[in-house]
Amino acid sequence: MNVTAQDEKNKTVRRRMLDLHDVQVGKVPHDSPWVRNVRLQFLQDGQRKEWDVIKIHDSVCLIIFNISRKKLVFVRQFRPAVYYAFLPEKQDVIDVERYPATLGVTLELCAGIVDKDKPLVEIAREELREECGYEAPTSSFKEITTYLSSASASAKQTLFYVEVTDDMHIHPGGGSESEGELIEVVELSIPELRDYMKSKEIHSPSSFLFGVSWFLFNKSEYCS
Image (cartoon, rainbow, N blue to C red; front, top):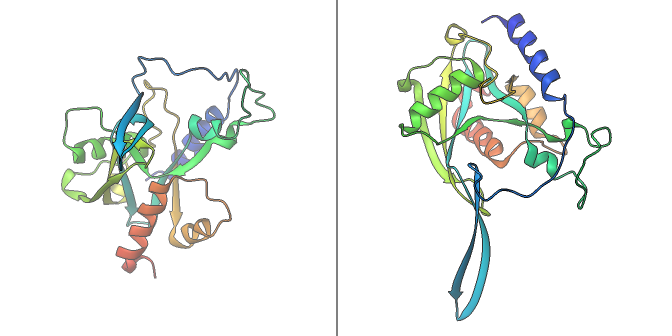
């Protein structure tokens, strides 16, 4: 694995990721390929109720452990939904000096949506190669479990575990250029991960916390 090349790629991705301008807030179009809003109406315990639901794609995510250097492999990227949580309401054009892109940058597990007619393990394998630059056979992947992505959105996520080596690293990763992805590859040792988990505020989604907890509980041979 060429660590220098990876560092240089990360620097380039980070610079491009934080180059944020002309941010505007608008309504979601009815034909959005990513989310669909529906209103669920039902009778529960004799009471008529309504609930607005967001339908999103199912997804896969990966806990990746590099056994050559005893490090977990994560990704860091800008998430517009996270960024939006920091923005003031009723403001169409956003002042990026006051609300910089760093507010929306998260540390996550490598992941991808299920938008292809392929086995989940094959989608996980493609995401590993595309986002993190590792080529691993499907036999290396262990399917851990499937759970709800969120209690407020209609989708499931399947968690995989895979061990990789430096020899499996074929390129610096970074996501799909054609899809406009800007993904930074982040490697943390077990002590570095534990320090991050002790942070007062963790800028990561719940799937990250679940995946890391699974690893710490089930791969204790790597955590001592």
